[in-house]
Length: 254
Length: 309
Image (cartoon, rainbow over all chains, first blue to last red; front, side, top):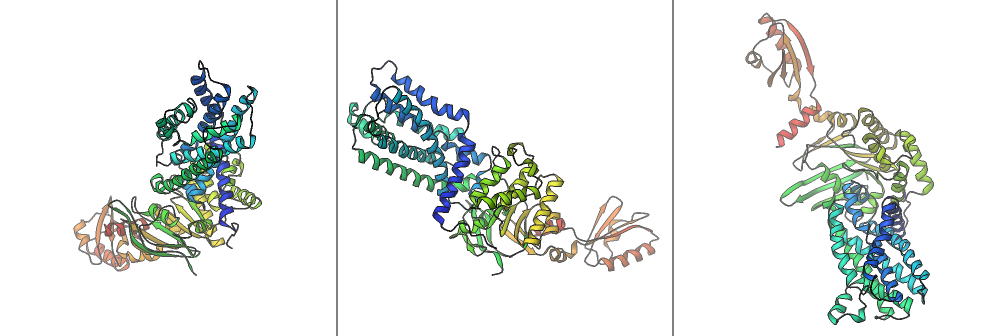
């Protein structure tokens, strides 16, 4: 009588996270305005700060890629939990045989895939403009890793038990915009004062931009392996804290 | 193991308010169990703890042999759940909602397609399978929620007020499906409802919760039997007597006048009828109406909850 489809808890939960990811992509990401927003916002931000400044293409392209991945990976995931709370689908989801970590991982996976998809545009623009990619595997690895890292940050930002997406978006913008300005996108790390550099090292975006510079210029301000390790550490920390905070906020959401 | 649900000393507090106060009960496998109570009595909090959405402050819960503290995910694998305020994904089609639920419960692809098709036909939703859920009526959405809850072929089904606000046809169809599921597949059902008639028709056993405590727990028949004083005899005469005169008759607990009819509450309706006939003869009054009323379940419910207030 008793169904026994799940044989091992780990692959079973991974499959369920993929199901949540597919649901998120269908409902939240496969929408014209979301895709256009994902493409245009970083582009306009970038143009606003680059036009009229005498900066080289090799400096500008990593910044544009950094903003694209950062903004797209953190654009939708923060509003999924508040939106599902408001639409009354959240209780049904948390009643299923899934852990909170599975739900969060599914949301992060969808967001990371969206970030990866959008990042192909600035990469293509960079290539067309003549920016060389010296180390393609590092470029790819850095985009994948940072997509997961920024998506995890987005999941963390969605933890407050609100059912108003606008509230979470405000909190999200409050965190995201300062990070863009301190992460070596507009001002190179080497040109920053010591205190500025110290603040920049607190931002995961700094390490991604540095990784992209490693892959396009062959050199960066931080050793390559350190960039990767720190980005990985940020990813796991954001994920862990997001899961803990969401576990605490569930009773207030339902 | 005969018990589907074992709850002992279950307690949940929200600040100073004790929403569920040290309740204990058992539900047998295959039983249709009704959980009744007024608004704010603790029904939804209890069902949320039973399904592992809320963590109790005290007490133990076992569902289908699984400890809900340590084996929550395994327990949910054999549960079907229709939460009170839940909604389907309105941007997905009926079919996509079901497939998503099947994936969440790890139902293999072929099986979930077969079951989805069968359930949609049973609940009269097959024609709407490609329609986005936002275009469904409330009754259709509720039926879809029930399909989603049954897709994993559950051993136990939790339903929190599943027929509230539905049209008569949808409510009747849902009741029929639940009854069939319980009788033919021996699925244990835990149902909260405000609808006394629904509880009386469907449930093998009923618990009444009030102010977070179990006020009564028994079969619907015995709950009614316990409240014998709620039986009443309705009478009217060609000339209305005074309430005071009727109250003086033996075997009467209370007299209420409803228009021309007197409602005489009693523990012994047949002794009272003899008294009424004698009274009519003595006072030259002719009976124009006489009817014995069994206690309505709603009266029983109100009596029990009032008594515990």
